[in-house]
Amino acid sequence: MIPARQKICLGWKQKENSNLLTTTESRNNANKNTSDTSSINSTTADSNERSIALVLDTSSSMEGTPLDETKKAAQNFVNVVGQKQAKTGIVQYNLDSEIVSGLTQNTSELSSDIDQLYAQGSTNMEAGLQDAYDLLQNSNSKKKMIVLMSDGEPNQGKQGDELIEYANELKKAGVQIYTLGFFESLADKSEQQNLL
Image: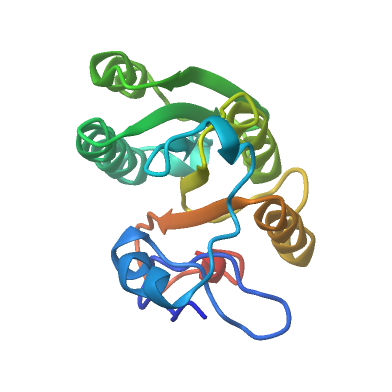
């Protein structure tokens, strides 16, 4: 069982037992006690190889500080992951979703793509997750992960319990999902933001 992460770095709630997926920091300790269910297409992949879809909320609610902080975190993420045996792709979502960068280890390309992101439109987190899942299906990596960065306020596509169910379906298909929340204020978080 994976322990709950504190404060704003929480992931999708499990429907029956309220366990939470956590960010990478907590996951490292938790993996010693959990089984790995991410073995899709593992026959041709090195055991340490990972494919990661970095899913970034670029909706208008992210304008200003939240998007600036998201971009900084995403830049740091690709720089660290670029030194490991992992490929990263970038998906942005607002009203719809777009694969900005395919899976690559080219950190310069990823950094450039992150720099060009800007906030607009509404928030369709489901579309972002779907594009991330589709991107990962093009990989033969043993471990497939989605790292979602958002303010946690979807207003298009699946929302609330439906969105949690959808994320659980992706996890059952072998994709690990981690979330990181970016908020102006922790005191004024909405019910949906508490999912992050």
